Length: 292
Ligand SMILES: NC(=O)c1ccc[n+]([C@@H]2O[C@H](COP(=O)([O-])OP(=O)(O)OC[C@H]3O[C@@H](n4cnc5c(N)ncnc54)[C@H](OP(=O)(O)O)[C@@H]3O)[C@@H](O)[C@H]2O)c1
Image 1: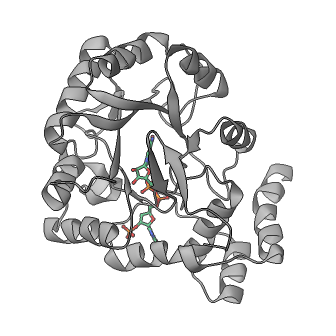
Image 2: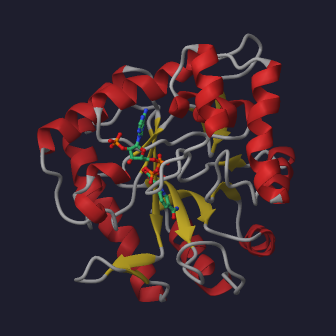
């Protein structure tokens, strides 16, 4: 991390290290069923903590249940400073499809399922994952489902609440219902629809957690990214993460990987400093796309 740049940002009551870990890749192919090698998945989770990660993103609908159960097996009893962030609002069909699960009964059940599968008495942070659009934010009131989650928080089952796959209007609506500590949306070097939102959230002290920081199922590919990486003696994925760290102080990273080598590579980004020229070139990836 560059001198003077904080390596943490508040996430609920705790300070999350800005380099965290997303557990989705630990489930089987298509985020469905168990991993081919459960011991390797457990080794990745333990290595993440050993290398200083204290923020893990998960959900009971990864697998389903698989990543939560792996996290419990690998890391429980959990260290005091570990922040496990889960999400509710979707369920998996028997064909591995992603379906909305927004009824009061489904949301309540999801909180209890997460508690049981993670093996905790309180969930530290729960994101309500909007399903008005499966692949991106779409308008629609979140008042009813968020009120259910706020009620579960009042019952002491949930400590902090975040939102995922949401529009600025939904975040405003949400903040009138309860305190929102984080927003998790699709964002990376080549997908910057949320630029203005990130800055607004930074001013409000709310963490922004980009999902698909490396492009997700379609890995980032850009000649600029490759050239900058070559110049810095880093990999393109490291440069993509370093650019996100540098983009705003409230960005918390949760790159996903099932590989120990990739995990180490991703966490080594703390030591990678981008030059001003590199940042200008990387900013141009989205600008060029926007003007194309
Ligand atoms: N809220 C939501 O709707 C939502 C949606 C999607 C994801 N998420 C969360 O966001 C997290 C991150 O997203 P993601 O895992 O889908 O996508 P991602 O972090 O953008 O990319 C993961 C992909 O990149 C590969 N990868 C990781 N590190 C690499 C490296 N150093 N070099 C080359 N390839 C590398 C991984 O493969 P290997 O396994 O081979 O390393 C995997 O295929 C998830 O784990 C999940 O917790 C949330």
